[in-house]
Figure 1 (tube, rainbow, N blue to C red):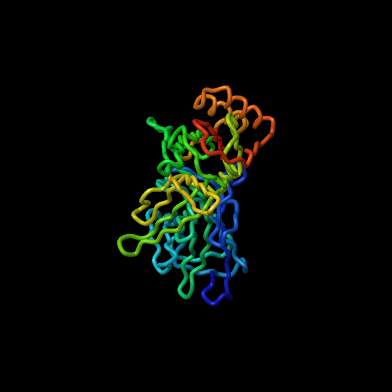
Figure 2: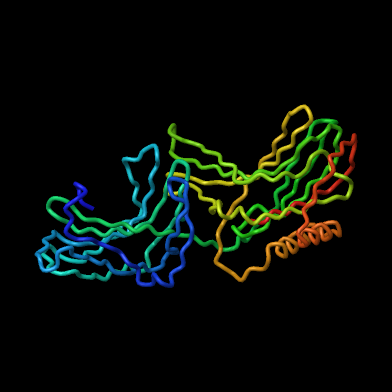
Length: 354
């Protein structure tokens, strides 16, 4: 890139060796849009070619050296002047000299460490990129190529269920249970809701999935909450024995793995919020943190079949089997908006697929 925006006598380009077959994935850019980038994993070699094209072949093109860098960096939007680099590798492609014709230079960064997942959030960006540079006396010519890195994890050995309670003395007692607390990004959330005592009129119930991004340290800590999804569970109290299968496969597009204290700069955590609102507009909220992680691609069954298996294991009841059979048939049930003074023990089966 020319410092003055004109007068460049050469162009530079970066081409990966396996560009034709390399997998690409969508990734959010800073302006909120999505674009496709080449996908890499930790320890994977990054190799390719740097093409230097002269605009005036035959005419001498002097330079102070040609190099390529592989960089991983974190940028905090409130401190844009500082880029925190956690990976910085350099390969010299040519010593200072001159070119009289276009030339191609090979490069290879072998088994590159890429410890963190690429991420673009509300206050922070973690990116990996290649930067090729032709050094010149007055102005350098540079070209950057962003890539996306996904971090893979193994199945958690211990994965306990989540149990919560919401209650008002002598008026309301509801228990919630989710089958586990750690989910991979293509997993299924299966849950049960027990209505033990309901003597108030419940107007609305929903499940929210919240992403909390935390940046900075000490007194300069910023928290941003983003509601990834909302799903209405019911209006009013459920009819005895009724269960509600919920299927949703669109969440993964906005989900990343849980990130804790990344390079001591930021964290990304996820929470399940259960919200109950009575007829007077008063809300009860119960929150549980969940851990999200990414696993390697596998041959996938349909999400409805996956949900059915998970729910049957967790619920172990004919009610769940019947409800999920309806979900497989493409039905979504809505409970009646019925209020009652006392319901006894009821079960609401929850299945959320991302």
